Length: 325
Image (cartoon, rainbow, N blue to C red; front, side):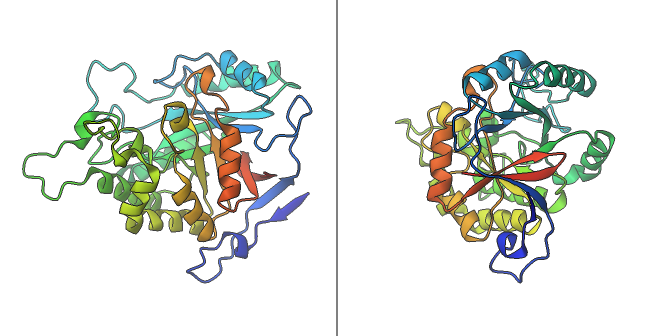
């Protein structure tokens, strides 16, 4: 059954209704490959050795997904056209996020056929956004039109620096009013306003994974709720831009695997996105190893329901497919 997402569902409620036309297939009561009902059966953020920061084989990630009871997955290999980042150590072999597209596509097609009937596999990309590189980003996607799903993520700010490295959090000589978190979110907002040829915005508060810990190991900056309270004046516009442009927001469970108390983003941001009228949410583990595939998806489903969501989205050929939670 098909439906069009109405303007009342997607419009940011502080603005006049939008005339958005996003065709969606509704799939109620999603059943996993074992025939058991599951709230979330699709992992739409998985990496393999085609991404510079993963050594996982595609077979191992697929088999982990099958073992977890998932019915579908989407590989989302990294492409960051501005990598290696300015503050990446020259000796870091994981710093160059350019993709061997042809090899990736060929391996995907082989595995899609090999595992047919056991799990659905989709072809995706995690594209690093940067406002100053919109022409290059458009050219890349135009020359690679076969993706089912594109995550847009902000991996760099401060003129090409990645928060993954500690140097991102150190002020430059003479730099006044230094606030690396605000710089990161302002860069994310600029990126979305400059380039929106993506389907879901990835790990909105990615920076919380990277911030330096306090002496007792409990820095509040590592809490998504804390970040939202402090930076709502820039995070709210990010949510507005996503809704106005018909983009999904990703719920990324990777922080739970790393021992953080909340997902990327956490409950406060997810609830605000819903309150503003956002209804498109994708769910991904951001798994770089088999152990991470589908991690804490039961908690993800509960969190979304607590925030008011009744559905989540997957994508096929860049079109959203809605599933009941």
